[in-house]
Amino acid sequence: MAIEAAGRLYVVATPIGNLGDLSVRAREILLSVSLIAAEDTRHTGVLLKAHGVQTPQMSLHDHNEHDRAGDIIERLRQGASVALVSDAGTPAISDPGFELVRAVAAAGFEVVAIPGPCAAIAALSIGALPTDRFCFEGFLPARGAARRKRLQSLATEARTLVLYEAPHRLREALQDCAAVFGGERSATVAREITKMHEMTYRGPLRELLSRAAADADFSRGEIVLLIAGAPQTPADEDRGADGHGGALDRVLKILLAELPLKQAASLAARIIEARDNEAYKRALVLKQESASQS
Ligand code: SAM
Image 1 (cartoon, protein in one colour):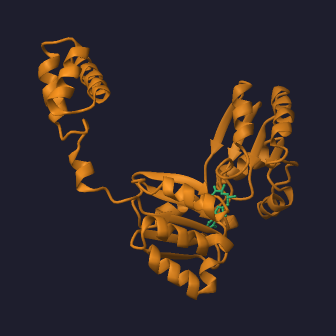
Image 2: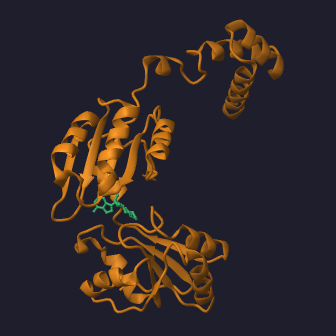
Image 3: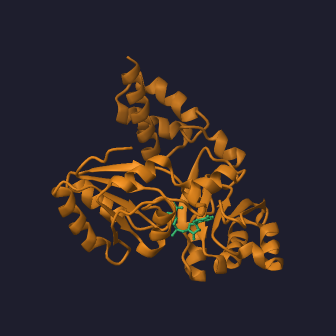
């Protein structure tokens, strides 16, 4: 059995559906701490009962997190250890916890992750969309105009987008995504991960949208929506690190060998018709690179 260390806050991930997904270590920590701070004590009670954990609970949710942080820090000061859980998955990920973690860390106590399920990561792992770089956006705004504005701000995002969506808003969200990103953009709807009616749909946004319109089950339950990043135009790739296909770097390297940085940057900008501040920033980078190599 893991022995809890006094005066620590453990941030414990819990299942996102299948109660069997509580890790051995998570259970040990929940058994050994003095108190479990839970988003909804009744909800967490079901999980604790299933795993034979009888540790007392305290509620900690969006509306009392600030006040509870003070209580919890006082307990840590007295040498107790506390576990934080949310209703499902990893606390502080579109769930309460961030404020508590920040306050506990600022008070000088150790905060320890007990990692485990997270719907965003589970969906990415099966989504069949690029996972090397992704951008977690949590829940989109509920209202149409605000949602479209947020999506527009993401229209050129090259990384895979990860969104949490309420079932009754999925169709509208897909509609807006198709309007802003184009119907051909690849996407994945991962529904009810680890649960009985688990289903994953992959395809262009227009196809997912017609499916949402035709099949009521499509929008039932808990949902993660993944959207492929914006395709990068060849022009973007050609621009290279200096934004000028390497021409700015070539000219700067020659001039930097002969002239002070500011003068080299200003001349290079004139020669290749770049902006002054762009050439200046690039000159700084090159200078730092050459200093670190010598
Ligand atoms: N902290 C959680 C985590 O680590 O994933 C997220 C909590 S957030 C309040 C709840 C949202 O997560 C749901 O509305 C849904 O978008 C997503 N979600 C949670 N469980 C899920 C599941 N089993 N399948 C698909 N999405 C899920």
